[in-house]
Length: 339
Image (cartoon, rainbow, N blue to C red; front, side, top):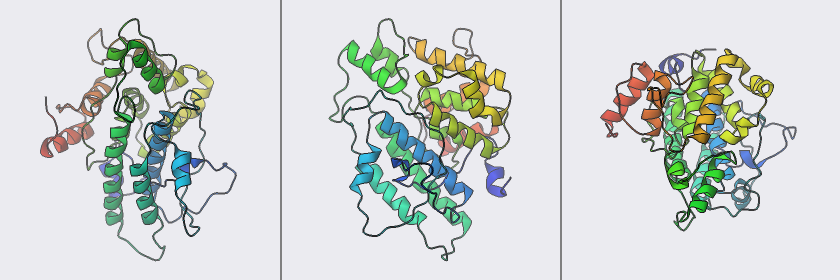
C-alpha cells in the first residue's frame, strides 16, 4: 500500500530498498531460517535488495568474490543481520575458476558500516526522515563505488584488452555467449559501456541500473504503465535475479518469464519488447538507441529513450515525463553534464 509523502514523491519510477549487508549474498540455503527484519522499514529493505543484487552482478563479472569477501570478516561476536527473503537465482557458470579482478575491500568496508547501522538497537528511536536521509547518503556512496568497478574494462592492474579476441572475451564476460559481432569487438564493447551521471538525491529507480544499458532499457520496459512502485521494484529485482545478463534471458521460455513478470500485467507486449531490446543489444555492431526508424526498438518510446540519454549517456535534456524532468533539473543544479 501507499506509505505517505515518500511514496508520493517517487510515484513514477523510484524505489527505497534497505541497508547493505555484506554477508547476505554469500549463500545460506533458503530454508536455513530467516532472521528478524522487523526493525527495517520497507524503504530500507528495498534498498538492501538493490545493493545485494549489484554485489552479485559484480561477482558474476569476476570483479570480486562475495564468498572470499565474506570469509575475510571474522566478527568477534555473533550478530544477527537483516536478510532478504530468498528469491530465485540463476547463476552463470562462465566465470567459474577465474581469478577476481577486484578484491572488494572498499565494498567490504562500506558493507560493514551499513551492517553497523542496520543493527541499531530496536529501542533507539530515529526520526524516519533522518533514517531515509542516512540510507540515501550510504546508497549514493555505494553506487558511485560500484559503478566505477563495474565500468572498469580490463585487469586489476589497468591493462585493457589489446586484441580483437580479448575484446570479444570482454563482451562475453559482461553479456554472455550470445553476443554477436562481425568485425570490431572493441567498438562493440565500448558502445555498450554507459557514462552515467552522479547519483542524485531523488533516488530514481533507473539510477540503480545505469551501469548497464541492457538492464536500464529492460527496467524501462517493465516499469511502464505500472503505478505501484513496490510492484515495480519487486518484479524488476526478481527479473534480474533470474536473468542477470541478456544471453540468459534469450535462453528463457515464455512461461518462465511470465511467472516472473506476471504482477506487471500486459505480458504479450512486454515479452515482445524484452525480446526486441535483448536481440538488438546483442546483435547491433555499434549499439545506440533512438526514435528514428533505424534506431527505434520495439517497446522503447520517448520515456525509454529519454531515460537512456539521461542515465546511460549522462546527457541533460528536457523530457516531458515529470520524474525525468526533475532528475534533469537536479543534475543542472548540481553540476551535471549538459548537451
